[in-house]
Image (tube, rainbow, N blue to C red; front, top):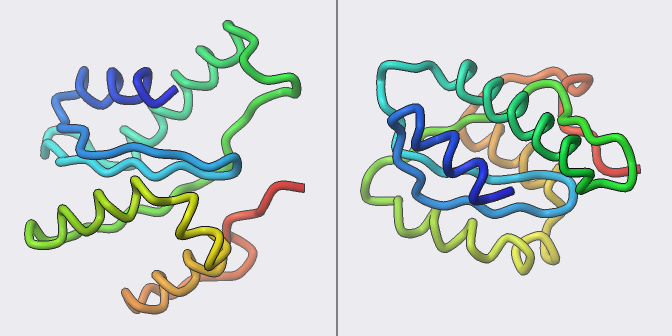
Length: 123
């Protein structure tokens, strides 16, 4: 799936910097080209990967992405730190659950949010 998503990102003239996933979420770090908005790209990634996963029966249960997504920008000086973080997701999430980390990032960036729209963990 990472290679498939990388293809979608590149087809839209963006630069894939790092992608990695856990069973309940994915981190995609890109250099964004200004001709497309992040919402349009996120929708395209979700739509195309859902079709691909279902067509290839990669899941034993019906696959679907959650509504919404989170997007954050970083300065060039932080690129290598973000790449390393994404590469080490599994280790990072042993220390802190994704949903807790997500709330912490929202608070750190001073992004107001409504709890009803926060990521839902696997059931």
